[in-house]
Length: 432
Image (cartoon, rainbow, N blue to C red; front, top):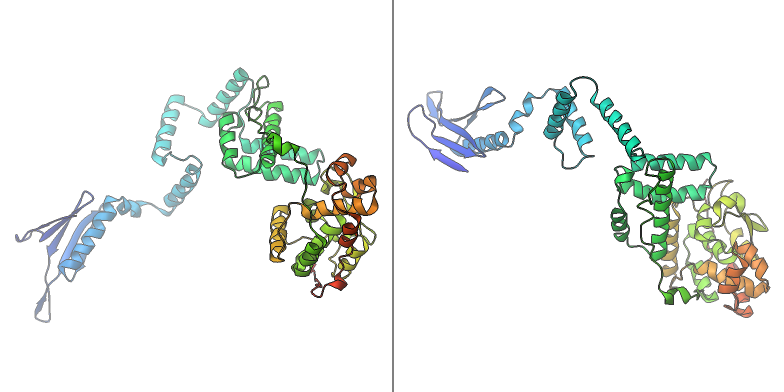
């Protein structure tokens, strides 16, 4: 900020120079009741109108001049020339420009003006659409946004009657792809997809699931003519990382001890008590627990519908005596109300269960309740086929992972963890 002081008559006593603006300050004493008081005028032009602002002291006048200079220098001094309609148009244009980072409103308008002059007559949009059709004929595909491919793919799934679980899974993974890549699907390269996957802190198995989702979506686009039909898609080019040899050879699973289950059920929060009990004594997966409704919990079995199961096969999970006693202490919900209605996604339920296990003083085991159920059930019944049907696994999986993991005595102790033996058993109230 530069300031020049002058004492010439009818000349400014000081000129404030800031942001390329020069704002003069004039001495303009005021007379009142026979006395003369110091007074100063700050004068400048704003939106074509001469503005005069009075100050009682030179310091106050300097502040006014500095503020005016900064407003005029920053372009804010022209805001008053905009009508309410123009302001609304500006905000609408600004919202559209947010979808195209790096482009200014002036540059876009200049480009439109040049395009309009080049076209001469007619609609610019119509001309662009005609050009896109011509390009698609030459290249063999129709340029389509990733979001449009995603929406059409989901609409096709619903029309074909795909399971609710599969549709939700596609929405979860493909939805993230859609939100990340907002342009045309043919413009997304393998390196873009790989960088996106590498930025995620996920396991190799989860990465494989995301890759599968991308391959499926890009394959749909190729089949519909949104990508060249004679070329491998960029998603298919994504490297499919595999586990190391040592990891592949490991088939060991983790299980809980009956004492661990007593602690978990004794300290479980009210809304998770039936979830833990069903997981421990009926062996439902976390995703199946998340979708389970009260009407599917019957006196002698728990019905897992095909849409809710991992292998899309309907099955009946057992209700042992211990589970009956735990559920007897729970006030049931109504009809198709979900057992885990407060959790919108199964991952949220899994996180809450993990926290509850730690709070009970037990170290969480990955899929521990289900693994322990399968191991205990096959040990207690000595029937691999029955356990296979109840758990919704193949006989081969039961033989590979669960046979001879637990002794019959320990299995008996697991299914005898009953509420009467715990002083802190809870009664749960579920509102409809």
